[in-house]
Image 1 (cartoon, protein in one colour):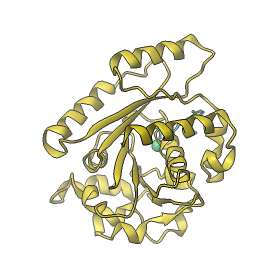
Image 2 (cartoon, protein in one colour; image 1 turned 180 degrees about the vertical axis):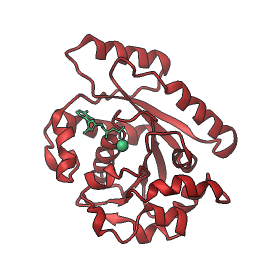
Image 3 (tube, protein in one colour; image 1 turned 180 degrees about the horizontal axis):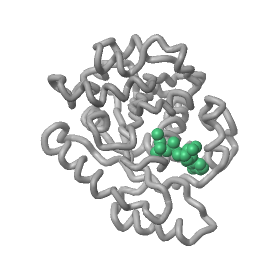
Image 4 (cartoon, protein in one colour; image 1 turned 135 degrees about the horizontal axis):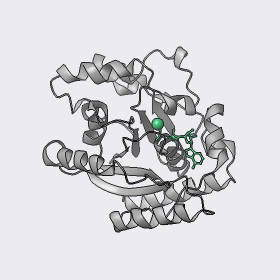
Length: 252
Ligand SMILES: Nc1ncnc2c1ncn2[C@@H]1O[C@H](COP(=O)(O)OP(=O)(O)O)[C@@H](O)[C@H]1O
Ligand SMILES: [Mg+2]
């Protein structure tokens, strides 16, 4: 059965895209078939996976609004077993156009049924609008990345409320797979304090794996590569490999 995991936090810059790309690459490296869905009109996930947007003949907009089958739009990547449903800035229009759709919250779920993947990872945009709601409705599980910085928990209440609203009506089975601390700096006590505070807020839900701040992770996307193909011995690479293992165990 396909396990669909949304990566969401309405705050920008917390590591959603970095997590989606690298978790996806390591899950695929573990011999799983993986599809990454780029639900953010900024399309950073797509370019980080080496997709040249000008050369695309279709993207997630066509899937959500025109009804093009996902299989016709999904593209292979340089990582064996890893494909992507790319996005470009036209997806921003879907945020508006979906509002008048019948089953507007279920459009992505409907589009992702019966696809030949073990994992589908959905990289959500930095908002709690209709696109993110589509991501949460399509998913079985949720990963919330939080950046190890002073305002880490700010805004999470709103996200948790949205998740509860989705569970009440649209997707009662949506589980919280885990909260992931990202950009952790082991040399500052602030990072450690934030980690402890996140654990207090989400008992038993915080991943053991912590993603360190690592410049190699920030460099890789400009080469269109996941860290696995850019610097697999870096600290960042090893942390995402460990996360993939944890995700496989938790999502069994
Ligand atoms: N662990 C990390 N170490 C260093 N830089 C990181 C790390 N994770 C993400 N970044 C960088 O921080 C910025 C925001 O990360 P990104 O994954 O795009 O966040 P989001 O998708 O939540 O907006 C990007 O420039 C990215 O390369
Ligand atoms: Mg992003």
